[in-house]
Image 1 (cartoon, helix red, strand yellow):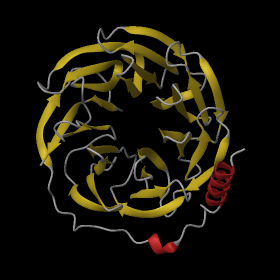
Image 2 (cartoon, rainbow, N blue to C red):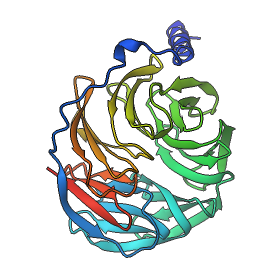
Image 3 (spheres, rainbow, N blue to C red):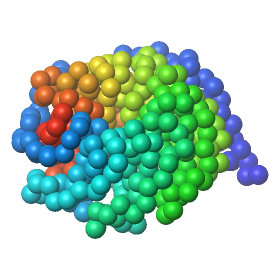
Image 4 (cartoon, one colour):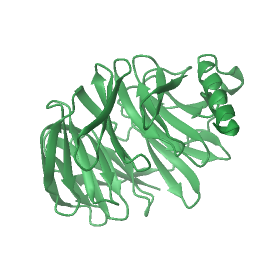
Length: 333
């Protein structure tokens, strides 16, 4: 085996084992005074039923996909109006998009199903059982060409074929699994709300590569990966967003956010990561900016009216779309 790869693997293993004792030098949160730079510019009304549990934006396709009860509603990003929907049984809990292949995917938490649909026609192509209980997060990982589904009950992670939805593998990790993200080095990161940690798995074999603690936060709910700068930003329910270096396997900083179930979405500019939008169940929206690998609070909207953790960014306009109880708040400077 290549000695460089052996050394890198050994270093990662040691770092992951040390993750439960992160250096306290990075313990202090950084803030920018909490200035309010963002505001609610407009509201998009929806006509579906149930809470909005997830939102996904297709910037190039100029569409916004909204998880509702019985359907994925589709909004025109430019016009701000509904242009169609995908029929899905039960409450849609998460959405994944693969514009390159023209496919979208949705989980239904009550039905324990995964549905594949066509992004152009908005027709459901296939629905299968997820083989786990209460499917939540779903992500398409283009390098391994796999679809990953986490489950909030029973701790099961399932890998599926994005073409057929056939199960390609699974791993039982804990109990309340939440957000999923992957890097370009074959690592899959899965938030475990019960263990206050991120599982690190091989994207091909699903074998464990260790755990990364989210201390001094707890109950991780949603993840964003900045692969270029090697950072994983983790929203938690404990009032802190944690910044993790996946290469050393530990927390390197955090910023204060609202409390309760949290979502997270990132805005990227060419060749660099710009900011994060983090809505939480207490109704607060925190905008976190990034400069020289330092996360600071750019804006706090404590009365934005947020009623959910669904959030997405339009990479073209820079606008943020945040779930309310039955509509979507559009935030801009």
